[in-house]
Figure 1 (cartoon, helix red, strand yellow):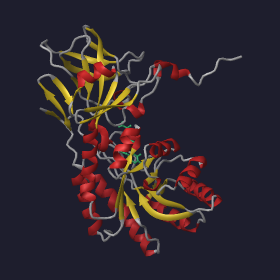
Figure 2 (figure 1 turned 180 degrees about the vertical axis):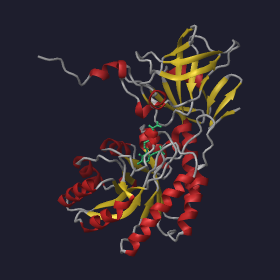
Figure 3 (figure 1 turned 90 degrees about the vertical axis):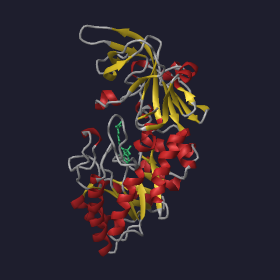
Figure 4 (figure 1 turned 45 degrees about the vertical axis):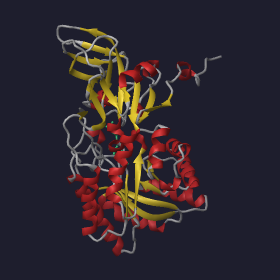
Length: 422
Ligand code: LLP
C-alpha cells in the first residue's frame, strides 16, 4: 500500500518502508529523532517540473530554504536545477554542494551590502529586488565593484493565494515585493541606475497553494506589466513565477507540478510572451513528500481528558505544527496487535505548544518508532536548539542504499562558541 502524497513510501506487512529501507531499522541504526529522505522522490519531483518546461528556455530554481542539506542540493544540482537563495549562507551552501552561481536567484526583503557583494562576486544569475531602497543600495554596491547587477523586480500582484496567513505573501498588506501600482516607476528608476541591469520580473504569492487559479491571476497581473514595460522599451528576458505549489499532507489534492506549469505556459503563450525565459522557485513540492521524521515513543501517559504519547522529537525538530497548527500525518513504523487509542503526540520540551499531532489514533507502546510524514520541507531547516537539544541526524535513501547525510549534532557543539566571563 502506498501512503497519500508519498509514492516512495510504502506500508508492507513488516511495517513502513521508504524506497528500499525499512524505517524502523533506520531508527535503530541511526537513533531518533531522525530525518529520512528519498532521493528518487526528489528526482521525480524535479522531473515533473522539467517535463512541462522542456523545449523552452527555463531555469528551475529549487527554493533551498525548504531543505538545504548539502546532499539535497547536490541531488538537485545533478538534476540540472538552479537555486533560489535568501542569504549569503545559502549561497555558500550551493557552492559547497557543487551548484553553479550562475543558476542562482537571490530573493528576500533584507539583503545586506555584504551579501550583495558576495553574490556579485560569485556571479549569481539575478537579484530579485523587493524595494526601491534595496535597488539603490544594490546599484551602489555593484557600481563600486565596477559591475552591473542583474535585477528582476519582485512585484506584489495583490492576489489571495488562499493559504495560511503566515505563508501568504502576495497581498497588499504583506511585507513582500513592490506594489503593482508602483512597479512601473521603480522599473524606470532601475533603468537609470549605473549599477543595475534590468533583466526580469518576479512574483511569489505564498506557499502550500493547492489550486492553479491564484497563479494564473498573478501571472496575468505580471504580464500586464511586461506589456507596458515593453512599450517603453524595457524588454524583459525572463518571467519568474516563484514557488508555492502545495503538497498532500492529508486530503489536499493540488495539481501536479507538470499540470500547473502547463497551464501557466499556455497562458504565457496565449498572451504572446512564449519567447521569454521562465523561472520557477519551488521548495515544498520538491522535497516535502520525500521525507519523514522518525521519533521513538518514550512514554504513554493516559489521562481523563487527554492521553499523551510522549516522543523524543519535539517542536525544535519540527516547528510546523506549533507554528502554523499544521496537520501532519503520524503513523507507527511497525504493525502492532494492540488496540489503538487516541493520543496527543507531544515532545519533551517545556511548553504546551510542543506538540506534533493532536487526537491521533495510534496502536503503540513505549519504544515503538513513529513517522511524521511529509516532513521533507521546512522540517530540518527550521529546527533549533531550544532546551539545549542537539539537532537530528539526516539520512538519504536511494534504492536500498542508505547514506548518512548529516551526523547527529554533538552536544558540546551547542555551547562551543560561548564564553565564561572574567
Ligand atoms: N520563493 C520565495 C521568494 C519564497 O519566499 C518561498 C517560500 C519560495 C520561493 C518557496 O515556496 P514553496 O514552494 O516552498 O511554497 N515555513 C513555512 C513555509 C514558508 C515559505 C516561505 N517562502 C511552512 O513550513 O509551511
